[in-house]
Length: 93
Image 1 (cartoon, rainbow, N blue to C red):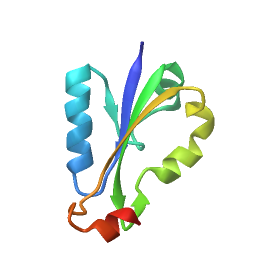
Image 2 (tube, rainbow, N blue to C red):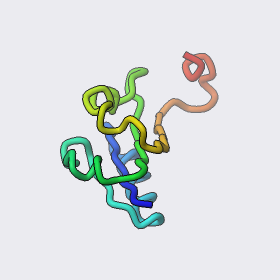
Image 3 (cartoon, helix red, strand yellow):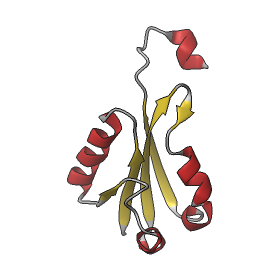
């Protein structure tokens, strides 16, 4: 199977996780600004990573804009958030 990793983050942690995954799985890693539609259309699966900033997924607009290209592909999703685990109320929202 042919896969790619696409990520968008704010401060660098999401990039680090995407690069670790890319290294371990031998997959190319892209930001939304770097990836070409051809690469998306040729892959069988995607790993999509995003940070959460002020309660919003940083990659959400890119996902909406490329829904037709990613529809039908296997998607693995990861998110990175900086909220400490003891802030339960904030995490639940």
